[in-house]
Length: 228
Picture 1 (cartoon, rainbow, N blue to C red):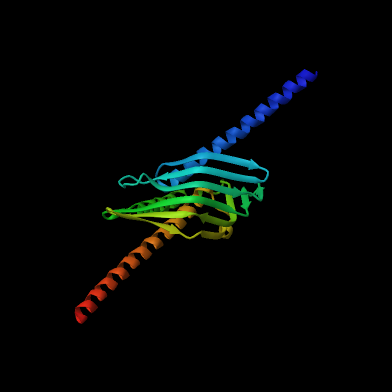
Picture 2: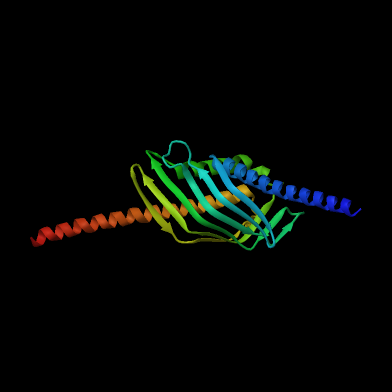
């Protein structure tokens, strides 16, 4: 009897562990599909981990590839993402989170001729929203009190010229609260849009800085001519 109980408990433990591992694999696959379909490029998640005490979701090695026709291999890469879970309502299909953090994120903003990778990604996001607007009702949604992106680097490339800019932390509050929550795909779109906006602001500031610097050089040259 004792031996049978041990065997039963061991089998139950293996079954539980197998279910848990399957859930983590399923989460990774779901995320890759949701992000990839939304941005229109290949997406990969290196590791998806579900923590129980406290409840949290952790992702490592997130990578979104660049659209075709651009030099950089990636559009976005992130080292680590953590989502804390306060509670889940099965009837509402709603997860409430006090905080989501993304660390070590790189975004590549690139222009080739008249096309930019950010323009292509944004067009893909808009197209997805138009064609899938009615399919979100049955999906699990999230409301996140604070979404923070830390350690963001923007790699800016215009034809052959390139530079890298460090972006201050991005903080978004009450994400999804005004529309009853956001789906995984919508959340991916919000993060992508926030990174794009920050990178484009950095690009604009860099261009302004170059313009001011060039004007200062020209003014210095003219003043030099006056006093020669």
